[in-house]
Image 1 (cartoon, rainbow, N blue to C red):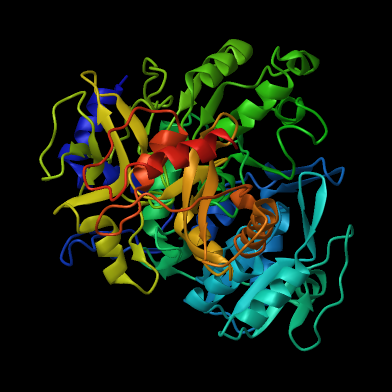
Image 2 (cartoon, one colour):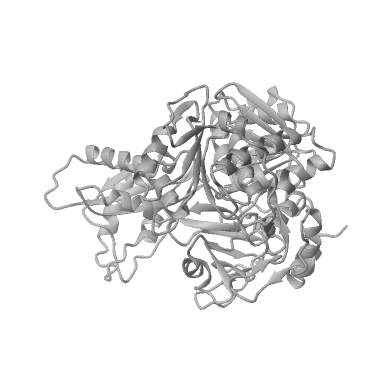
Length: 626
């Protein structure tokens, strides 16, 4: 059996030969003759002359292979008491009708469709329907506020929006329609129409001339076939937080994406055709795109779509019930979920109620996996617990323990070793590689493997500036860390001001922009503070304008409400500290890194450039009083 070292070495020494073999797992209208095009470096393209359709490979191909009756999708919604199973043939038929409905609204290949949906089967159907037409979907997490949705509509300029009447946050019903209506009012771009899924828990009045009912539109539509597209054509745009507060539209292509995700399912997750894979995330995030929708279906697996929480819907045994009832082999979720389960059921007593005979592995990602949670989960479950690391931009794991190639030894605190295709290097400020065990900037040598972002939507210059300009020939991840003598990667944290809140990557800059709009706020800063449950939680520090005599608690409440309204409850913004001034360098730069060290109780040196060292004591006092 070929082991990890041999596979990894070959992927870097002969990337074209390595990925040419992976191409064979898919069906192509025109198989690629060229594997890698570097003629416009750093804008390299994989399989540039290949033609395929992602929806065909994720759905129709399995029907044609005689596996149409296999479950493709299992929807489990404890918040509504509902379950639904769609076979591959049923999924194909519904996707074809949805694609026909979108085509009836004028959607053609290359058009954008914004999708803002809860965790229901129709969300996956809409995404696959776009892929079927060669249209570009941009999924927006249903928990985002109207302003955030409007910003994405203006940037993507969609022809159509697909949404629903409501969703659920835990057991709480969230009305989607008012958010959509307000977003369309705020946006400058005008859409041609909206397709609305009426959920029985909360039907709404539709806007005449703009909105069409999902069920009626699909019932009247002619099923649409798969439109062949170039491998380099965009499949989707997924917005991720930028440090400026302006979202970045990560562009994923069709060919490289399909090849990499299909390969990753068996090589990394050791899950193949007919087996049940569950990514307990949301389709609004990259995990949902990659491992709820595309990768499991490309591999012919059964994917779980879960509308619920790890605890409270109804109890800390929720995950065990789903895994037991549906025969889950592999579970992928965020450490936050397991910290929540551990908090509510520290002895794991709920697990004893369920048979997890099929359960083989737990993968965790999205934030740092602390050793306590790792050991608790490993002891409780008795299966491999795999910490792995990747980003919205990369689309699939950079570092992991590849169970389908070779199970490596684990080191708590490390997401193990780089995966085939990812040439990970640790660089110092000058761009030189550092010795093993030395911290630096975590980078990847170009070209990035298939499946990584190809650019940012409508902004090649920002793509280069954000990721490629700092070190010539390298992609900058924005994370700091080191590689030990055994080749294991350790990620120490962000080097910018983007934080992970319960696995959701959010910009502190966007929150600062909101705080700065309050009439009583002169200046502000938001930092991520380590939290045992969520990974990080944002803390805001504000300086009031002169003459603004405000009750601090009342002001804090207004600011919390403001962020909730304009960024959304997903930000978990609850802590505001009113201070006399912010720590700054003499040039005026706010010392956020020093503030984070104080908040997390880490040792720090007072920067020599600080304008007034005494202010650090005030920051410490404010945090102690939280």
